[in-house]
Each structure stands twice: as structure tokens, then as C-alpha cells.
Image (cartoon, rainbow, N blue to C red; front, side, top):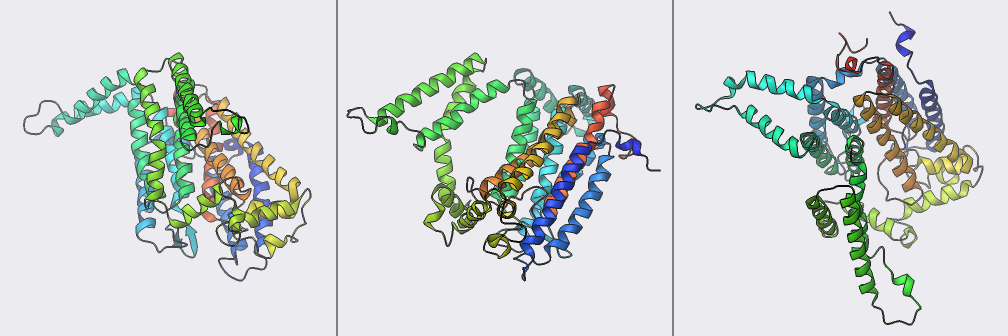
Length: 488
């Protein structure tokens, strides 16, 4: 029988934020699709979004009562990963193209986007890998030793599995947690490549950053990592002359060669990076490797740009971002230009509900999906946009607050991964609406129209609520012992 006791750790502020975002989503989708007559324009999306939210809330409250220790089960993880890879392969090679991409699987008239669900899979698997104790890996080793006779071939005295684990111990002595980094990267790579091939540049970047965020939070040498990353940011900036000293000496009657000045500055930055890295007790060969790798960034990106890895429309969007959208206002710069016009037209209080000329009259393309933030800004102005951002901020703060309270590493890493999913989607979507980032198909969480986006975000938030049970655990060992069934 259902009992309210299973919701005793439920964060009702998160639920209130979700409800507010739901209301805002339905209000905006109704206004932007009111006059739609085609599917591309948004006809019928309002009713579909209601169905998506009904399914989303069902998943959200069911998962809120879930015992997340079941997600640490090897068989569950393996099944989850295989299903994810299967759908990513299927959507790329066995579905028709839509707008030059293979991102959606149509099921009974509803679009299913595997790349969105891959974010959940990657977060869970990476969190499990980095939260697993050394003792758990030793149990696997013991099993391998007991089964060595089955693995022997042609009189080989040492089993393959035994050799692998002996090698693992030797590597682990010199590079702690190396096997965790290697395993997580090997599992990340197929997901990243398949999503990038769809192509879905925005989602592939988000997937990479989710993995990197979890890796960073598990590291005990975060300052050292930051010091190693300094050359990655500064050296390419000087190579592309994004950062230069030409402006300092412009107008000054001097014979100083600006190129020499930039070269000297680059050398100083490299020396400073080495000094900081040495102070952080980073191995000298890692410092050299980091600097040399930084010099390969520009030629690597140039090679990717000149190859066929990026589609024509993707290159066009990036070029439009770095150039002025006004240079091509009727083609590549049209979406960004109309978005900025809509945001500017809203001013402080907005034009009023259903009064937006850009969003409701179909001047702004994809006003109910990618550019729904511009639709909000036009109708409700700066006040409405600020309220939305405050709701998101409250949601993210509550998630991070729970992460800081829990003593369970698996729960902490789940919070980190899911918080990063929300943060990156919010940042990228609002950034492209403002013209500060290239246009990508990244939706605004729980506001933009889309079934996959709604279900994925509701799933993430449901698991966040479930992970709150770990806050009240008296003994951390309880978190590694699954109950008889997942809803206990």
C-alpha cells in the first residue's frame, strides 16, 4: 500500500520549480502555435506537450520513490548501455533524414531522440565507475582467479583475466584510478561519436562536458587540473590572434614588432603555466605533454573544419556566430536576427500575452522549440525572462545543496551529472537566443516543446529526488546493498 513515508525526503521546492516551468511551457507553446497550420510551424504541439508532461510527471514521482542502489548493479548498467548504443546506431543508419540529420525515431507519431537519453545513461555509468570502491573490484578479481581454469588455453598457466588484473595493479600504483578514467572514456567514446555523426554538435558537446564535470569533481587534484588546462585556453587564443597586443601599441610611433611582442607574451604564459604546474606537484612529463597538446589544437580544429566531419549548415552557423548576423540577415543570420529583435521588442514588461509580432505571427522560426526564450522575452519582457532564470537558479541551487549534504559518492556524482545536464542546456539555449553562441538544436529544459527533452529532464529530476534518501543514511555501507525490489 502506498505510504507518504516514501516521500519524507522529497524536496518540494524542486517540485514547485518543475510545476512553474510546466505552466510557463504550456503558456508559451500555446501562444507560439496558436495560428500554426503546419507540423513544422507547431500545429498540434500544445496537446502533445500536455501528454509529454503527464508521462513526465508519472515518471518523476515513480522514480522519486526508487532505490537508486539498483542502478549500481552491473547487469542493469550493461543492459542500459547496450540499449542506448543500439538506439544511437539505429537512429543514425536506419531512419530517414529530417533537416539533414538523423536524430529522431518516430513511434506512433511521436518523435524519440536517443541522444537525449544517452545523457542519462552516461551520467549513471560514469557515476557508478567513480563511486565504486577498490574492494568491489577486488571481488571481481577473486572471481576471475577462481575461474582461471576455464580461461586457460594450450597449457597457459596464467589466465588472461589474471594477467589483466596484475597489470591493473601495477598501473594503479603509479597512476591512481587510471582504470576508472580509461574505462569511463572507452564507454564515453562510442556515445560521443554516434551522437556527433547524427549530426548533433550541441548534444555531443554537452555529453563531453557531462563526462568532464564528473571526472573533475572526483579528482583530488582539481587545482592541478586547472593549471594543466591553462595552456589549452591561452595558446590557441594567441595562435588565432584572438588575444594580441596590437591594440596596446596602436597609434604609438614605435618600431616594436607586434608579432615579437605576442611571441614574448606567449613564452611568458608558457613559463607561468609550467611554474604553476610545478607548484601543484604535477609530473614534469605531464606539463610538457599538456603544452605540446595545446599547440595541436589549432591544426586539429582546422583539419576538422576543412574535412567533411561538419555539415554545411553547421559551418554556416559557426561562421554566422563569429561574423555579424546582419551580414546575411535573410539567410544564415535570419534566425539569430529575428530572435534578437523579439528580445529587444519585449523591453521591461513585454508586449503582452499573445501580442508578440515576432513569435505569434511566425516571423521568428522555431519559436516553440529552439527560440522559446525569445518568445518569452517578447511577450513578458525583462521581468518575465528574469523570473524564468530565477526559477532555474533555484532549481540548480537545490540540487547542489543536496549534493553538498550527501555523504554518498554515487549520489553526489549523480547530482553533479544531472545538474550539468540542466546547466548546459540552459546556458547554450539562452546563449544562442541572445546571439552569444552558435545556433544548435539544444532545447530549454522543461520549457521548449519536445517529448524526449521533457521525459529526460523529468527522469533526471526524479532520480535526484530518489538520491535524497542517501542524505539520511546512518551507515554509508547501506548504499551498496540493494533492497529486494527497487521501490522499497
